[in-house]
Length: 66
Image (cartoon, rainbow, N blue to C red; front, top):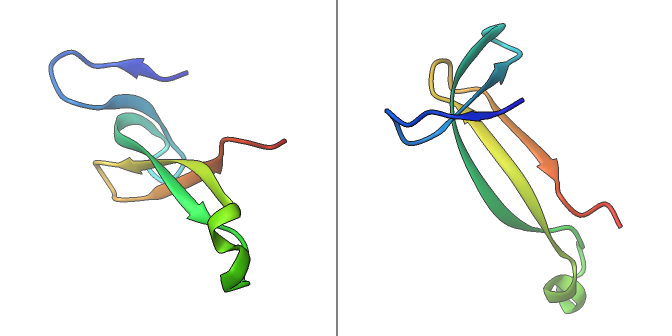
């Protein structure tokens, strides 16, 4: 479970690479999933991206699995 850390800007989450609860920078990115240029504007999906501030490991998860 992610928790907020009031002393630093970020979230504390478990890092699989560090095997510790570490500070993560979390953002939402829109990614184009279609390889066809004419439909690319309709195939953008939001992804949650978290980067460990200790080791630099990044993970992403698609937020809309409809």
